[in-house]
Every structure is written in structure tokens, then in C-alpha cells.
Length: 580
Image (tube, rainbow, N blue to C red):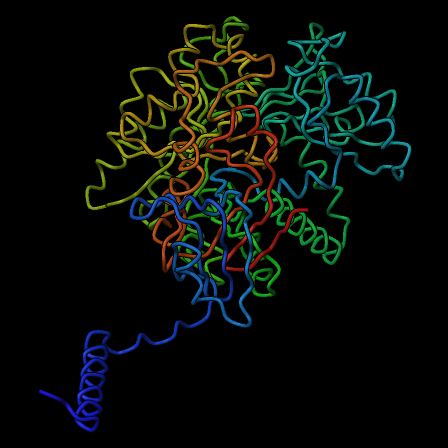
């Protein structure tokens, strides 16, 4: 049968129309265009710390939250004319790093005085003070921070318990009072001028929870442990009272600015600051309202019980200033530091017979603090370093929890959790107490931990991260800055290797895996601040806080970790620091 030209054309048209109809029917309605992102990060390894999607190549950010994660192709529709695109060039991006324990203003204050962190001898410190005294005005206080007698290469002479006497400082600064804070923050060193202004003599008694160290003749050598440092602090405060309110406010704002810059330059997007006053919270709010604070702050209040009673309800704050300020924790102290022999121990120090450290706040006072915290919906965070202090903390928490069975999801914290009796380790998981620890303290303190505790006690309970995690306890990481540098890279290295400067490893069975270490700096820190729904991992809808590093600290050889640097610090979708 022949088909004419007209019939042939009609057949072709019908077939074509059918194809178009079939095609439209199969494809369905066209997807609406995606709203462009403000920032796209791509072409790298993005580790999310989110089990639903552990690793991606690209991420789209819209405003201050994450819009989507996936491949470069999947993120292409999010790139519009105004979208900033960051090419990671194969580097590592992780959730914004959270320092879970430090002293924000202390970081800034340390920048205004002598930096003694890198000093290796008392003579070096004396030389720095001499130089400062030559430049100082008559009567001006010379301040510094960061010395640690256990890190000096030579023992000063004369000395008491390894500490020098004030005579050497008196010679270079006879007319200027000098106060130098120990690296731990739990002791100070003062010269004769400062002690005279404080009214300290051989007959000055030790205050409760503190000690004025004296020589064999009963003369103060210049070292003030724990609460005794307040004697010198009050003398300096009296001098500062002569400053105008404008001068004091300008200095306070400068301190916040310096701390903010330091944190952002080190890749820190959130910081848990331990022990701030009500007035400082007011200042933080003003700075945030003026758009002058980039890092997010989680504040632990450090006030007396009397002041807490009056102010807790008023100051409780969650997510102020686009989640830049939360105030819902109270900080208190059970004991001092191990380096200055202020940590409260069950048994005497191995290197100082009969001495078991100091209980800096009475248990009765802390019991009142606990009742105030739980009544006002606050988290309680108590500094505890020695095994006696940690046991007392656990006893206090357990008793409080039993007395308030109606309270749920408290997440009370043990700040430091450094030295534990083996019998107390399981209690952390059972009670749900968060161990807010500092990896860098382990390797920094290790040489004198053995001297203070002896090998057996050190192995049983010093920085026992794995033992704690196996109980189900959450371990959140930090630096205790300015006790240590706020830099997370050496802290991560210490946490994952426990390797000391001499190459030895301090009880390596307790080190964290690389991923455990990253979680301790991200999602665990977020959990410790009740903010795991907002930050700590990278997922759509969460805050766009990201830290980008030059090296993949999760995979490079151990020794390469320390050379990693921060390339970008992103807070709320804004690049607030860009490394060169």
C-alpha cells in the first residue's frame, strides 16, 4: 500500500506531537529556581560531624545559616551574581571550633601586660621587668602573666619550693609595684613595693583558701597561692580606683577587642568564658549591640552567693544578639592548681610531705551555690583539679540531683577534671556530669604531674579521657586561655597524641582518636552549652560557623598537625578572619 505525501506528513506530525506530550508528562513541572546563597564553600574536604552526611565537598550558606551541603554540582544552583565563592583548594573545613573553657577577658588583659608564657628562666623574667620599669611612670604597676617555675631550665637561687624570692625584682624595680600572675592563674608573684602597698608583712595571716609562702625566717618571699593573691589584687585595685570611669571603660573595651581578635585569628567561633561578673555581661551586651563582637560567648557567672541570689533571675539570657551571648551557667571553685600545689588531694603531694593542697571555697558555700543554680535553671560549673576536689564535686552534685528529682537535663560540669581517684571515674557517666577538660594541660603539665602525684597515681587518674568516655561521659575540650594559648592546633595535637616536647608519650592509652578530638572541640562543646541544636556540626538550618584549616589534621602524620594554620574563620556566614 502506498502512502501519499500528504498522509506521510500527517503521520510525522502526529508522532511528533505524541512524543512532546509524552515528554512533558514524564518530566512533570519544572523545579522552581533556588534562592541564591550568600556564600558557597567548595572544592575541599568538609567534615560535618553529622552522622547523616559525615563528609561533603561543598556547602551553601544563606544569611547566618547553612542552606545545603553536597557536591560542587549540587551547590551550583545556589551561586548567584552576588554569591561569594570560596575555593578551598582541597583544604579542610570543619564546624566552627568551640573553646569550652577559658577566660575571655583574661586573653585580652594578657595582651596589655608582660607576656611571660615563653620564658624559660627567672633571670629572663627579671630582665623583662627591668626593661618595663625603665619605661614606667613613677608608681605605675608593672603586670605580667604566664610564668611557671616547673618550665624553667634552671632553678633560681635562693628559692623556696622552687620559687624565687622577691629580692631580685626589688633590685630592678624598687619604686614600681610588680605583680606577675602564674600561668595557671592560681598564684601571683609580687615585689617588695607591691607587698608594702598591700600591707603584707611577716605577721600577715593566711586567708581562708590561700597561702602566703614564707622562707625559713618567716619572711614572705613574694609568692601568693590561691585566695592569698587577693591581698595583692586589692592593693592594685585601690591604685586603679584613681582612674576615671572613661579610662576604665576604654580599657575594658580594648580588652574585649583584643580577646575577640585573638580568638577569631585562631579559628575559634564560640568561647565558654568562666567566671564573669554581672557588669561584664552588661558590657558584652553593649558591645554586641554595636556589632563589635564576632565570637559567640557562653558565659559562666562568677559572683558571690549573695549577688547570685539577687541577680540570677534577671541575667539569665539565651541567644542574645543573634546567638552571640548566652548566660545560663555559674562558675565556682573547689580547689586550686597542681603546679602551685593548690590542687586538693586525697593523699599528700609526692614532692611535699604532709601537704594536700587547698579547698578554696567551702563545701557549705558551694552547696548554697548549687541550690541557687538549680532553683534558677542554671548550669553549675565547678573548678576541680585534685582527686579530693573532684570527689567532693561529685558528692555535691549527686546530693543535689537526689534532692531535686524534678530537675532534668541539667548537664552540670566539672571544669578541668584533671586528677581522679579510679573509684570516682564511673560516676561521671552515671550522673551525667560533663568533663570540661583541656588536652593541652596534659602535655604541658605532664613533667611535674609525675613529681606531684607519683607514677602510680598519675597513671590511674591523670587526664583519663578514654576512661571517662567509656562511662558515657561527655568530654568537652578547651585551652583555659590565657593559662595556655587559645590556639586549638597545639591543643588538638596534645589531645590526639599526648606527646611531650622530649618525644615521650604520657600514658598513650588515654589519647583520643582524631575524630574524638574533633568532636570534643565541636559537637561536645555545643552540647556542654545546650547548643547542639544550633552549632557543633554542619547541617542545613544550623548556624553557619566554620573553621577552615590549611592541613587536614584528621589524616596528616602526627607531626604535621602542628604546622596547620587557620585560613578562614566564618561566624554566622561572615568571614571574620582570613589568613594569609
